[in-house]
Image (cartoon, rainbow, N blue to C red; front, top):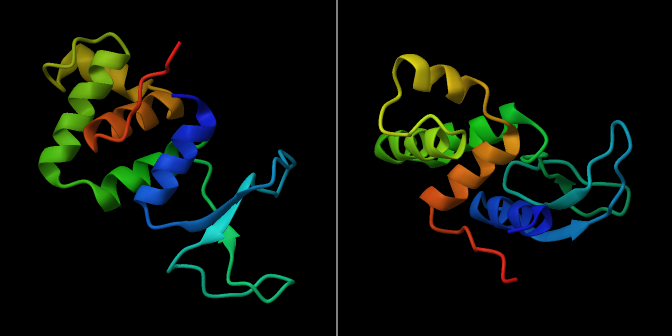
Length: 125
C-alpha cells in the first residue's frame, strides 16, 4: 500500500471528507486538506477545510489516532502487530519487545493501525 493510499485510508477512517492532495511539502504547509468535524474555521475561500495531520510523517499524529479510535483490545493488537513489523516478535509488549516498539517509525505505526482496522491493502505487483 503506497503512502498516498495510506493517508487516504487513515484520514477517511478518522472522519475526514472531501480530501484534496496539494503536494505542497513546504514548512508550515500540509499536503492534504479536507473537511472534519474538528475544523471550526473557514479558509480564504470560505470553505470549512483544515489541514489533515501528517500521519505518515508524525509519530504523535498516528499515536493520537490509536488513542482516539481504537478500543483497548484493538490497541493491544496494534502493539502486537507493530512488534511483528519491527521484528520483535509481537507476542508480548514487555522487555525487549517494548524497546523495539518505542523505536517504531510513523509509517510502521500507520501500517499496524491499518492492519488492525482491516483497511490495509497489499500492493498488486
